[in-house]
Image (cartoon, rainbow, N blue to C red; front, top):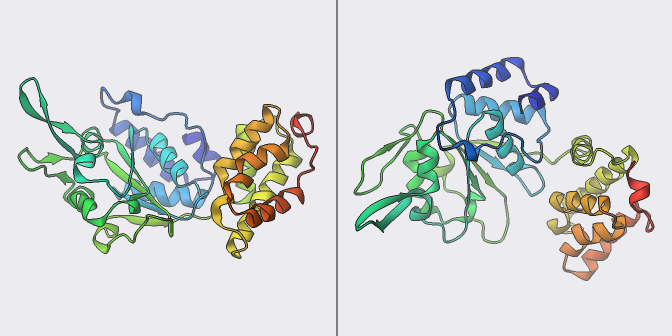
Length: 304
């Protein structure tokens, strides 16, 4: 992953500091299977890389904020890989409670023992905890994390010894604004993070992503797909369509379907168009696609 940072032009002093961090914090035994050494997707963007890496090197926890298709989870996974840390992915939802995060009592071998939750395991093994859609959970459920995320860096479980976090442990949370089921995070929780507002992916970076995932994709069509996504972004920004069709995962899946032989319009219909359930909105999205993609375009025209 450090090669990616060099290609993106990240400050050499930051890369050297990451290398020092990795040498000072070897991966503990038993956590090797949680390393993401070669993430499926790469995050592109020098400024965001420098901001995020600097915060983690300073011992801060990160909150990545932004709409869908901005690469929040990709960046979180890439950061764990760049720092050489095992990672724990915790998906938050409305019924998330303290027990599902920290752990709970369990009856084993005739006695009550504490079964560690993902936050506890991450804290003990010096991992990076990726807290996905943290604003889906109720604020009262998240209060248990306050001592974990602030200067105390401990987990206090009633009835058990206080757990002190490993010095390498960091937490990276992600959140979207305005999704159904989300809520405002309270100030007490937000104050325990430094916050990065994630920018929309640029056409140039989307082309990089497409060409890395599909090296044989012709340059002209990589440009068209990047332009198509930018067109959808503009229509979302002007409230002509919802964000349902602005689906980067869907676009990547669609190009994968094309590589397997589906016509481009059929693949885009499956990956993007059909995610807008309103017929009028689907028609608008299809119009954007047909303005760039011929109806008969198949694999032979797309790939070398």
